Image (cartoon, rainbow, N blue to C red):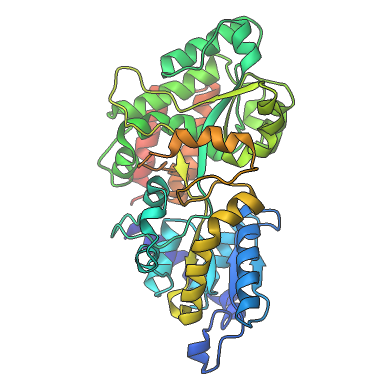
Length: 430
């Protein structure tokens, strides 16, 4: 409920601007006329996988059903997109299809009957069991356990490493964090840059902070922290996460100037020949393809936390920025499109967007070899990744990001970080 109250305040502040958007999402049924087209608002650019997939499927469906070309509104910036979506929700004028994160915004959209129950629709067309369980799990609503968002793709994350450098120093892909740190130490002592990180991106450093809590508690710690039932200073998993980030930063295992390196620059560094390991994912198969085909790259999953009970899933899996269907405009045509979309989604994923499909099934012939080799990492996974950055309220997230940078650069100890982090959630709840 706290998230809904917070978003309500933001939406109220946007009331004046929202009048410009009124009427955009009015359904054919409400207007008393037949539907002429399908509208979509996406956090995407023309090169984004989500747009490529939906553009293809919506255009083909519209042509087959005598509709006008689908109308797309694309917003690439995160902040700009959130502002735009908030205005649509506030004016109760959501388009037929829109991108939405699983959290405060999806709760606000549910409050105005702006979200179709995707789980029920998958049941209706007989395809619920065909969706990857971990991807489905990623979008479960925290309040009622239902799924209101359709995944844009199956995204998996993993570490890539330079096989030639590992072989030179007799190293193997680490399976535990102790082994990971030993590998880093060996590489550093031999003059190598062990690990590339995009330190200016909030989520990159936060991954290292949250790896141990995820492997040990899934979403247990972060939800307990948000509800003031868990503390960094008292939770073993959270303390291990803080210690890991501190060690990686202060021992010089990240590249020089890592706090000012963005994701594009970090990607260019690693694939350009700098660094031995890089936390990557299926979204970078295109960048890794040539090196992987030449036998220069290997990959490994998120290591186990030594001496602790770890859940079986060790590859972060998520569905990207979810896709919602507006319940107020979900007429027979939209129901038909939903089934058409699901039945043709895998083909569009692999052959057009070059991403993993959220549906299980064989990967078609002719795609990059990495698709086939990565699939065993996650095909039986049942637990999804838990992103802290879309669970925390904005004030807590901002404070935690500032503090994690201090931790990584060694200007405060893990104990000081933990004490500060525990105060953020208390202060921001008052």
